[in-house]
Image (cartoon, rainbow over all chains, first blue to last red):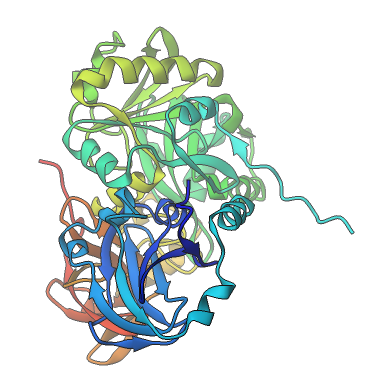
Length: 127
Length: 368
């Protein structure tokens, strides 16, 4: 259900490592809770963040959720398709619905994250 | 130590239908309800363009019956009960002595001295307690919620779809009228009422027969575009239509006049609870008033957000969402009466930002 090569946060973000870049999005669980996404507020290119910072928001018809980065780093790419097609977050949350890519600064940030199996259990316990 | 258990939410007679349809179920007012099926935006648009079928069986029904029923309800509510006839319903309220809301409701006159009150699910118990706390003569009050399943068929195609399943002459039914009749061979009440701003019908059915009616209507209406529709779409539809929701536009701090529900208040009819306060408000004018607004630019205002005028906080958002019909963020708020006029510029504080808003007339949407 959740991609096995991703890592997950308790706030329902996922990250995927591509060399020194970290791709970030929200999980299928999160998009289902939010409902249909209408706006995605993304950070500016070049901005730097620390692990745990709020980097943007996702607005659905009925709710808004903050997006937090589990790793510190610099925003090197933003998914511009989300401007006109915010529904990508609902339709393909683990793929085309990715939100940002960061060049991340500290490898040790990853140790507190969950793997797919642990995240699956975590999500089950939310019910 | 064992944890205290949360009471299991109640299920409507159509629960299995929702599960089968893949609905996302959430707890609402102590009931497990479908918040959406395919998607709330699609469901909303389908109600505006074709038709949607809602399960609203969680709503409460209170029967008030007897020779003294009319007089009792006349004292208890601000609208004029003497203007009802068998087969007519009207929108009203249960008000405190301060003219603030206990609940809003529909009152249906079933027969001489026989009324059915349809109330919000979240307030059914409080409404019953309030009604029972008032002295009455020759008047019996009973909670009949469990006797009814309630379906709402709403949209421009609703009449065409329903006409295939009832011998009742729907074309002759005016808005806020109802009849006893059969739908899909099941005896119940058919009323031309709704909470979406579209034409539509609400069907009061025996609970055990409701799933059959639900399935038959959906299968017959599929060709017209009929789909099951959930509470999320219900909320965006009613907000576009400028209809109040208890806990948002109306609550224990607001009067009907402040909420713009002047047409519900019939001061000339005689004594009723809250009348004195409303007379005074009518004479002086209300201090704060409900207005509608739309957001310029990105961002969505939500209930509780502060409303500012020229930098000063003047009120709070009561409802806010993104409108699927207008593709912009809309909302309602209480502001000082002099600001509740079309074109007033406001700002809404949303997290760290200030969104630009402008007052617009309610309702946002009216069907042609």
